[in-house]
Image (cartoon, rainbow, N blue to C red; front, side, top):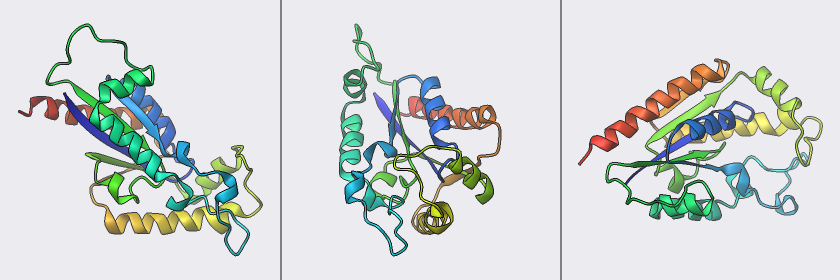
Length: 203
């Protein structure tokens, strides 16, 4: 049994969740872990000098819990999938060349060094500021974004986090989030499948 860990990151509303879910649906023996599932309770998220909640930083997330889930998958992907109800009970032993794929999706996955070190493939979705702002304004958040939150906090934090990411991480494939979803999926799916085939052929 072989494993492959793939990271899909990008700015808010850039399309990373859509791409990750579609990849998960197409790739056999795959599992999806989303960083958004690990936010701390709203009551403990710090507030900056402008009164904006500091969601766009690693301290707002239970990264230790997320890492324990990732490590659990790495130890035994098949059992992990079964616990999540994603894999039926086997009647035959797994083949040696079988490849299990973990797709990790989130806006700060490459900024967390212990997690970033696990990725074989790194994808980053990007879209222009005005498109990002328009998409964000059309979504309903709990709690909702206060007035000025995008320009005063979300975008500046994105630029800060991206600069930090690019200073510590290499090997990221940047994707144009304005491309049709089907085209993006086809490109990334082909890239991941090539990696899967390469792993299968390794001794």
